[in-house]
Image 1: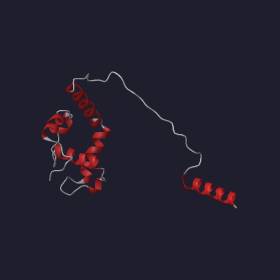
Image 2: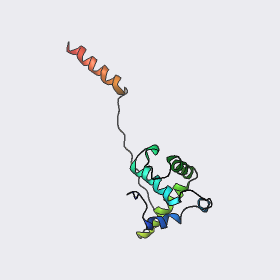
Image 3: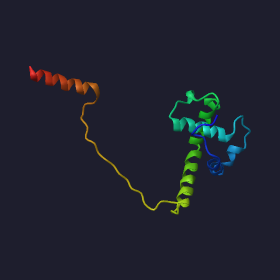
Image 4: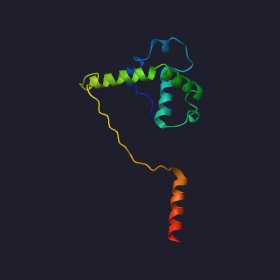
Length: 129
């Protein structure tokens, strides 16, 4: 079955060139593209690993690869390379020349949660009587 989160052929051609050679050295039951499509299904769809459709590889296999590639920096390196490629495609420098940081402070009360609201209601009720 084809899912909306699956890579297009052109996306796959760009991504497969960025994957480390080590990934291609082992024979697998499922193709790397199928595993990446399954990872994208979970990540983009916001579902739990165990809720993957049965026509995709077993969730344990997909989770294993996602976890391994996260720990070894494969995802981070691939994302950095794709950002660079996209910036150059748009006629920009590969690396941004500036960054903007924004922060906002929000004042909060010292008490949090249900207890704070209950105490406030009790004090209002006591002063009303």
